[in-house]
Length: 157
Image 1 (cartoon, rainbow, N blue to C red):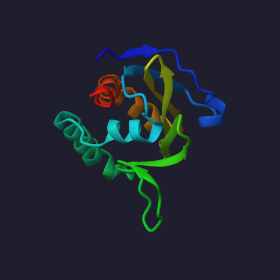
Image 2: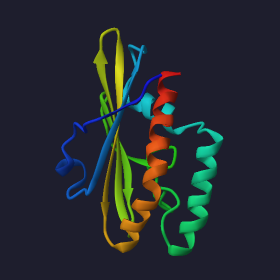
Image 3: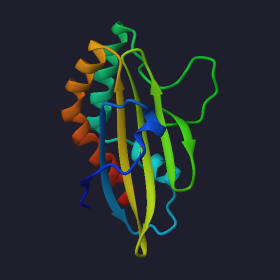
């Protein structure tokens, strides 16, 4: 299950205008009927224990700073994929993410035909707002580059 880093193939202005960080990873799957929602659900549900532990640590560290620990908004019913609110979706693309005081982010899951199967691409876009957002992004980037490929591998399982 090879995950490749690829050049992002999205319109950043339409998804998150002004994004300072964009990357993308892709995996091939033999699932000919896979759509973007099911790919996103496979990616974010039933995380590996090490990812759950990193997210728990992240939530513990950022809560005192007043940062969101999930995309859920108190009292607002939202379509969610794991902790991520769904911004938009079609069978080929699901956009999830949320805005916070330190940064805004989007996770874009694209599913495209590839022979008898599908390619699934996860693109991340981040727009930082202040020094806290820039520092947060710098700290999480090494983990992000491990977590996103691990999440994509779950789609091909």
